Length: 183
Image (cartoon, rainbow, N blue to C red):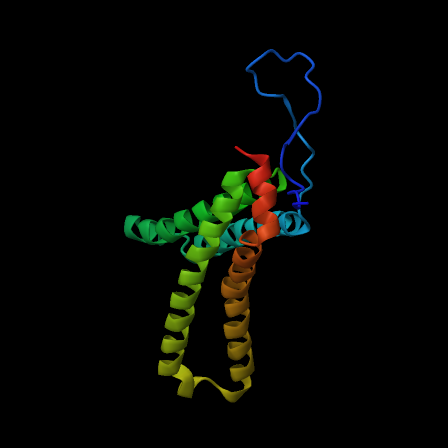
């Protein structure tokens, strides 16, 4: 006997209310959300909230630092990167909510988000290490540990999380669950 997908719709038995030539009605079976979807939905929301906190904190510091010395050019330099950050934050928050409500677009968006973040992580870590080589000899010995810790933390945050997100969103169990949900 063929194994049945536990997330798919099943035909009801019997023909109540059915006329000739009409397909039998389908029952919508309750789709159980995989644990990975719940975990990454919540993690996406946490990552988004943490990012929002960091943007607000950074803007606050910049406003205090440049108080009285603000120019239009400076405003553009600040608002450009921050608007991109805010866009990514809103995106990850929406993806988290979408995953928790089992929306197919949230899975596809999470896969796209993970791929973009992996590319950015490789580029930014490479640029950071390249720029670090230029000043490595001027870093005091007592500051080398925190610098290496910063590189590792940045790598984990920017690379490991998106890779795990990508692996779990592409897993067969998650694919089946979202295929059964439809729309």
